[in-house]
Each structure stands twice: as C-alpha cells, then as structure tokens.
Amino acid sequence: MFEDKFNVIYLVLFFLITVIRKTYTRRYGGEKIELGRENLAEIIMLSFGGIVMVSPLVFIFTSWLNFANYYLPQFIRWVGIIFFILACWLLWRSHSDLGEYWTFLLETKNKQVLVKDGVYKYMLHPMYTAHLLWALANLLIIPNWIAGPSFLLFSILLYLYRIPREETMMIKQFGEEYKEYMKKTGRVIPKLK
Image (cartoon, rainbow, N blue to C red; front, side, top):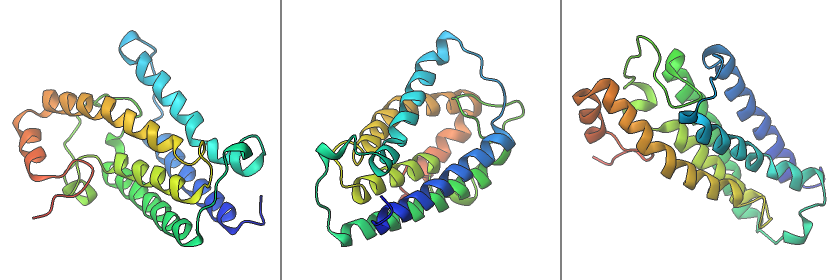
C-alpha cells in the first residue's frame, strides 16, 4: 500500500481535491437538495460517480481488485501525477472564480450572474475539465483495469448527460449573452485563436 510512492502521492492529491470541493460545497453549495423527479436521475448518477471516484482507494487499501492489476511504467504514472496536480489547481480556480454562483445540481441561483472571467474566460465548463483531468490521472496512475479507467468512463457519460442540459439552462437564463459567450469560448478545452 504505502511502499508504492504513487499510492502515497495519489492519496495526498485525493485529500487535496476533496478538501477543495468540500470547502466550496460548504461555503456556497450547502442548500438542501429537494428530491424531485426532475433531479432524481442526476442525484443517482452523481451518487454512482462518488462510488467510482473512491475505487482507487479500494485499490490502494484492499486486495479486492488485485485480479485486475497490470503494469504501468513509472514515466506514465508521473504524467498522471502532473494531470492530477493540474486537476486540483483547475478545480480550485474554477470554484474560486464562480464563487457563490456554484451549485451541486443543475440550477441557477437568485440574482445569478454569468461569470466570464478567470478560467471561465477560456472555458465554459472548467470544473468538468478538472474532473476530466482527474479521471485521466486515475487512468495513468492506478494500474488496475477497474479502478484506473472507471472514473474516466463515468466522466464521459456524465458530460454527455449534463453539459447539454447545463447549456440549455444557461441559454434560458441568459439568452443571447450566453450564446455569444459560447461562440467565443471553448467547452472543456480552451479555443485556440
């Protein structure tokens, strides 16, 4: 478990990214979530995502997934560490730039403003990008066919489900201003000029 330096580094970064998310959830996203038909599917999907996100911890702390282990060269695992560090920074920066306008579910807040500065100047969905970087990091750091790719597969499905709904919601809220913002800004990767 702790004899593998990559497991230790992974745990430190996992702790860091969890602290970042929890800090902003407590500060801005702590409203009670009403369970309704419109958000039940999303809550179930996000709950499943939570399980998938901790699969590397199952890999690190137990032998349950050992049957699916494989070899990863150290160089690849170091690249994964770099991706995870970038994910931590981008998640922190995204939350910091979005501030009080962040919500856990797809909804807008009263007196919502369209945030277009900071990292949002370059990407419509930098939090999704941060999670995608984290998911890629899992794939590159965790040498296990279950714990390595599961978060990436989940993230792709989540993005396909959520991004169109989020953009529709934002267009409904902000109209032409959001449509213009979409034209100038990349979705999860900054647009090259």
